[in-house]
Structures are given as C-alpha cells and as structure tokens.
Image 1 (cartoon, helix red, strand yellow):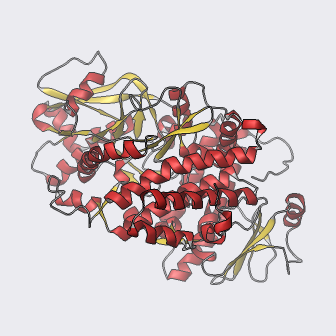
Image 2 (image 1 turned 90 degrees about the vertical axis):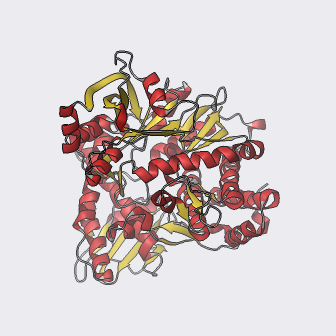
Image 3 (image 1 turned 90 degrees about the horizontal axis):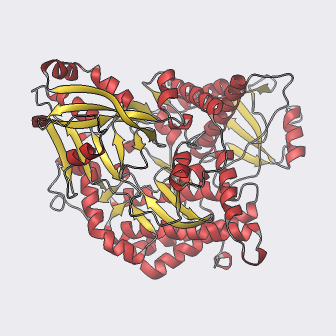
Length: 613
C-alpha cells in the first residue's frame, strides 16, 4: 500500500473516500490484467524503459521501493496505463506502490482517479466486444467505492478478542476491502446508504430479528433433525412472544421484513389475519460476512435469511430449489461424515439440516413464489459440539482476503505460535501454511474424487480454527455453493427433490473440477501465499512448494486414476482456472454462467527438487 504526503489537514471522510477510490483502482487493474491484458500480451512488468516523459512520481516510487513499472496497453482506444508494483507476480497478485497514470495519443501523462480508470477499461471492453457502454457496471463500481468509503470511516482494526466466539464475530465483520479480483467487491444494490450502515457487518453492527407469525396451514418446512424446523425456531424465539398453536414463527432479517411488508400479498395476508407482524424482538444477532447470515453465540444455529438485495453479482434470496438443495446436500454429507471424520478429524462440515418458509397458496403462482422465497430461512449448524476446546474460529477471508488488515492479523497469528529452538519467522510461516493446506485440501479433494461432492472452498466459505496461532481445525460451510457430479448422482439418487433443485445441484465432472481448482488454488491459496509472503518472492515460492508437496501426498494416500490425471496436470504447470468477474459483470451474466480464464500456475516451475517436506 502506497501513501501520499498531503498538504494540510484532510478530514477523515475525505481520506476514507480517497483510500476507497485507490483500492477500487487496484482491484479493477487486478481484474483487467488477469482477464484481458495479461492473456493478450498487453501487460509488461519490469524496468521503466523508453519512458523519458514518465511522471516524476513513478521514477521516485521505483527508486524508493525497488519495485517494477507496470505498463498496460489499451490497443483499441490507443491509451496506456502506468503504475509501479512490488514485483512481476506470476499469478497477478500485485501490490501497487505508486499512483496510476494514463497517456492518451498526443497528450501528456495524466493522473488517474477511479472514475477515469473505470471509464478507460470499460470503454476498451466495449470496443473489443462491440457492446454498448455498461452503465450498470459503472454504477456498481461507484456503489462499491461508496460502501468501502463508509466502511473505512467506521473501521477500527485491531487484534482479535481472546474470547473465541467474539473473535469469530470480529473476523466476520472485518472485511474492509472485499474480493481483490472483483470490479465492484462492495456493491450492494437495492439498499439505501442508511440501511447499508445499519445492517452491514463491517460496521460492527448487530440487531434484533423481525418476527412474523403465520397460520399453520401455510407452513412449508423440512428437517433432517429429530425436531421440525418450526419447533427449533420457536425454542430460540424471544420469551415475550406468546405461543399460539394455530400459528408458527418465522424470523426475518429486519431489512427483508420491511421488503416483505411492502409486498401486496403479504399486506393482504396481514389484513386477513393469516400473518401477524410481531416486529423486532429479542436478543441482537450479528451479521456475518455474507451480510444475510446471522449469528448469535447462544443459538445452536446460524440463520441464513433471504435478502432481496443484490450483493456483488446476485440477489441473495433463498430460492425454493436452494432450500431443497441444502437439505439434500446435508443428507448426503451425513452419509459421508463417518469416513470424513476417520480420515480427516480436523475438518467439520457446517451442515444445513432444516429450512422453513410460508406458502400462502393464494392461487397467484408468481406472488406465492416471491413470498415463499422472501420468507425462506435455512438453519446452519453452529459451533456447538464441533469446536474443540481452546480453539478460536476465524474467517479465512479476514486473514487472506483483506489486504493490509489481513496481513497484519496473519502476522499476529504467526507471532503467537511457539517457535522451536528460535526458528526463523519464515519457517514458522511455512509450517503454519502446511498445516492449513493439509487440513483444507485433503477433505475437499476426497469429497470430489471419491464421492462426487463439489465444495467451494473460497475465502468466505472456510473458517479456520486456531489455538496458540496454529491451525487446529477447518470448517467448511455454505451449501448453496455445494454441487454434485451428475455422473455420480443421477435422477434416481435425487428423486426426493424437485427437477429444478436437481438441475441446480448438478455439475459435470469437468465443471466441478474447475470450480474446486478455482476456489482452492486461486481464490484461497493464491491469496494466502501472497498475504503470508508479501514482499518476499522466495518465501512465496516455498509456500507454493508446500502446495506441491501436499498434492503429491494426497495422491499417494487417497488418489486414484481420475485424481492422478487432474493432480499431475497441476504439477506439470497446467494453468489454474480463474473466474472472470470483470468479463462476467461486463456482459451482465448470471454468476452460474461465469466463464473461466487461465491463471498462471507456479507449481510447474518449482521442479521436483523444490518439493517441501
């Protein structure tokens, strides 16, 4: 992170907006370099040559930091972008060390701000693909900058609490910057600025749930637990809510409650007495990083609520097929649990064993569906009975996906680890990362290769359990992203769910492998390695050697012919699949239709002699 000398005092809000804009420029360039410029030979990182007219601040940054000049050509519009990065990172995880400049044909270099850079890149894409200007994406980028600015104004980063579940909440609510390879990582459309501040986890907020009572004949629920979902919800409801056998309770996120109250079908049901609006009541819940999943330390379940807000790519409502799918994945994972615990005792799968909603059955199919999805609530297993004594659960994204804040907290964990014989810090970092890779990678690969279950182990779906800084457990979560290999799970095996739910769960084996490889190696390990080894390329190479070692070890212990083909391809340097977030947003594609582009794989250049042990 670079800094600038500022003449005179600048108020905190202006500083926050400046920093938010700077980070937006960095993530935009991350995306563009990985998805366009790097693939098409329009990117160079190295010495500054042939640039006698280059801005003085670029020359100064190169001398001061020892960094490299990043030069990007935009051939269709004839413009160029110049900045300084720490090194020529093979995976595109750059650290930016200077302001960014643009040069148009026949004009001098001009300092860029985020609006101008976004306009340049989107205009180049419009010409490249013959598409009109994407004003929607520009608005999402603007929204993301505004949210990031508000978060920076409120953020108070510091060490995690010594109390495990409080530290967990702090990690969930600490994501200041968001996804480093997304053009609008903090975009939240459909919610006012005031409500964003009121309900966003980064604001360290908490709030009571909003309860509705719905006539029992409208009950829609499933559970694989000993108790039905309505009973579980009622047991956790505030004591002041009077029981009524003719009604069942549904808690909702308070923003979603207001959305539902504005729906004509819900308003009519309230007037007729089929629904009672009980308002916000009870103890406050904490929003987690996903914004719509809520946590209370004394509740055995997280509440994954519907939220009709577009967060980055998707409106985050619980579609009916997703309610069904969560239960189906839970049933499958319960059959696999004994094997997983035998082979990988450090992993815990946070199952989603029950859901509840309302079906008003008015005969208006579109209205009834919207109301069912709007009320949809999934219960996710909490930490009761699975969190080992003395272990603190921390969101992986808080350590690896949070730029300078994650880097600082990762450093705190390494400093907390006992060092045998005063071993160097880099050796401690290698040992820490090796333990993490082993605890996470083995069960994820095993579920896929041995059983056809596709997890999405990206940074918001992995919680790391640590004690004395060391990794002790890994928690996998969010069944919305879990898919099933269709060749393993045909219609007969999934005959208990609707055709729509089956379609949503099915991936081909190739789709499944690409999704795992992206989430595990690119979204997770790339970020972890570049966070732990920030500014130290030699350490980053050793951490990639750790990944190589564990791929060999997994294949030796658990592999088969199918896994051998996939793993050997990675070890031989076959490119990782990278999700094309910028291109996906540019074409306004749904997230499921997102394509993959090749990301350089460092594993093939390490050589057998670099394998870590």
